[in-house]
Image 1 (tube, one colour):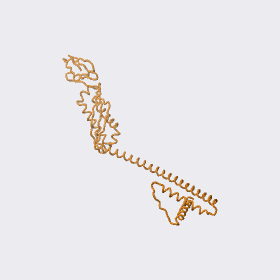
Image 2 (image 1 turned 180 degrees about the horizontal axis):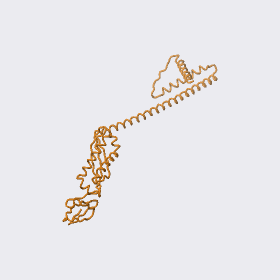
Image 3 (image 1 turned 120 degrees about the vertical axis):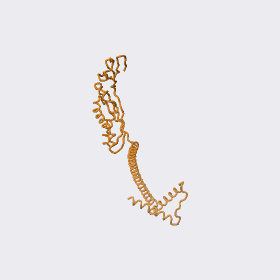
Image 4 (image 1 turned 45 degrees about the horizontal axis):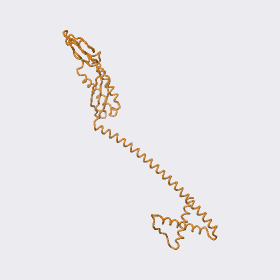
Amino acid sequence: MGQALCCVQVDQSTVAVKEQFGRFDDILSPGCHCLPWCLGYQLAGTLSLRVQQIDVRCETKTKDNVFVTVVASIQYRALADKASDAFYKLSNTKAQIQAYVFDVIRASVPKMELDSAFEQKNEIAESVERELAKAMSAYGYEIVQTLIVDIEPDAQVKRAMNEINAAARLRVAATEKAEAEKILQIKRAEGEAESKYLSGLGIARQRQAIVDGLRDSVIAFSENVPGTSAKDVMDMVLVTQYFDTMKEIGASSKSSAVFIPHGPGAVRDIASQIRDGLLQGQNAQI
């Protein structure tokens, strides 16, 4: 605002209050105005019409007895048509707004639990804006916007909330890990069962092939060598297989000696044992 002689200049987005002999006379809009001082006119002050913001920090507690600090941002402006009320009725606009914000927040937040307070920030902001608009309109001010920008619990409460959240996530992770291990064990057991089943089928088929081969060998040998019985041929074949097995064991790099019965009746005992074992295996398979 500029001033020279009896002229005053009012800046844009600003209004000036004109008085005559200390009494309110008029509101001066932006531009150049004549103020004849000799007639008692003077400029009492100016009032900005721009949107202003005040941040209010209010400490209160929730329904579950947790102390929190609620940070509210209030955007307001003076109304041009009520500029006289805004200029004369309030001496400290920010203090008045802060008092109303404290009153509304401390009346609404204690009715909510901590989690609900975070979830219902918009409801708290609407309550503050509604009460402020009703109260400040009488003083020539408009509440443009009310925002609850933050709800800050005590540091220990924050740490406890983080630990609870971390514990819950660890519990879910442990459950998922246990479930995965369970599935792996089930699949592993199913694979082992299938492997053993197929191995059993292979052994059964192998034994069946051995029995069939021995039977064919006995029949062919009995037909080609007169005077031999099937038992004699079977004993000879079993003993031959027994010694072949001993040869393979002796040829292994991890085996240097094999102890076998060496008495006179050892060969007959070995043949009898092998024959009995094969017959038992065949009967069990059948």
